[in-house]
Image 1 (cartoon, rainbow, N blue to C red):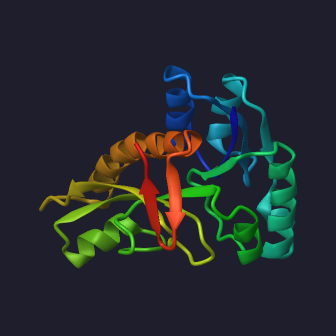
Image 2 (cartoon, rainbow, N blue to C red; image 1 turned 30 degrees about the horizontal axis):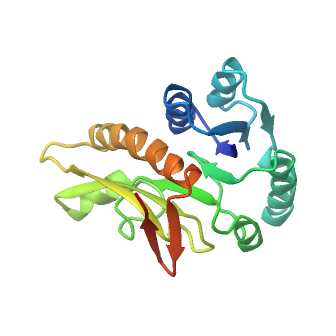
Length: 201
């Protein structure tokens, strides 16, 4: 039985998608905890309503990024996770933290990486005039929004798209591919080879 800790900063819609998929599909896994860097994160209430332990490590209470990451790591490790899932966790993580969870931490980013790293990805895509946009699930490395890619989903960029309409279509795909990628990890189907991820059937 694999143990999963999910990190959120807000409503946690991807966390909810993963929790619901795990329950519906009866994964051989346990959502061991949902942890946030913000006490007012809406997703904490949802997790608690599902009987999932929750915790808060408030980033603003720490003088340095390193100090926060050390406290967060200590809290995560209380739950001895096999996998850490970043689900809208709005923090840039230190190299030491990332190394501690190397090969067992996933992130979802709302673009077709390596295009449009950072924030405001949907507006970046519109401004660039690309015809397709999308979402990427990847293993986390020290370089922001990089790392071996597990899965991607593509959506068209329409002529009348706004940041809101495009983000809505991308989010629908996020809720499909993130649970699928997490399940593949749980089932031992993901193997990292350099910068590539091989997925077994």
